[in-house]
Image (cartoon, rainbow, N blue to C red; front, side, top):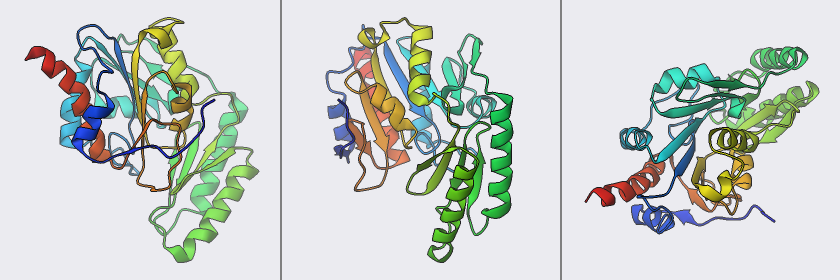
Length: 275
C-alpha cells in the first residue's frame, strides 16, 4: 500500500544520473515523460513563464525522440499551455487532464455539467472581489481554481486564508491546502492520476504499466494523485523546497532549475548511444 513519506532529496547532477541508473535501455525501451509545467518545468507565476534555457533545450531534444512519448500537464486551459509552448510531438493535457490534445491533432475532453461551471464562475468572481489584494491572486483554471497567497505579508495572511477557505467550501468545492496556495476542485471523480491513466490507455493499451518506462515530475499536491497511481511502476519526482515534505514520489527535487538536471540525465542515455 502506497503511503506518503519523506523522499530522498537529489542535490547534485550526479544524483540524477544515479536515480535513473539502469532504468532506461535507450535502444529498446519506450519511455514516457509525464511533466507538469507550472512550478516544475517553469516558475509558477500569474502568467505562464518561460522555462530555464537548459530545460528548454533538453525538452526539445527529448520531444523529437521517437522512443519518447511526452505529455505536458497543466492546471490551466489546454489552449493556453499549447499556444505557450508550441512544441511538436508533445501531448498537451490542460485542466489536469480533463482536456487532452495528441500530436496528431486528435482531442479528448471531459465535459463538465453546466451547473458545475456556473458554480465555478461564481466562486472565481467572489474570490477576486473579496480576497485578491496585497500580492494574493486567483488562478482561474475554468474547472478548478487556485488562490495564491505566497506574496502576502504575515499580518494579512491568516485573515485572507481563512476567508478564502470559507468561500471555497461554501460553494461546494473540495479544499486542498498547499504551503502557498489553496486549491478549489469540483467534487467529481477526476484528478491527474485519472488523466495520466486515460492518456496512456488511449495511446498505448490496457497493459501500458507493464510495457513502458515512465517518469513523472510535478510540484503540487494535485500531482500526488498521479504519483500515487504510478507508485511501483515508474520513477516519480516531486518538486518542493519544503524540508518536511511527505510524498508518494521516489525522489524530491528542490527547484525548477534542478528539474533541468533530471531531463539532462534522461537525454544522456541517448547521447551515450550515439557515442
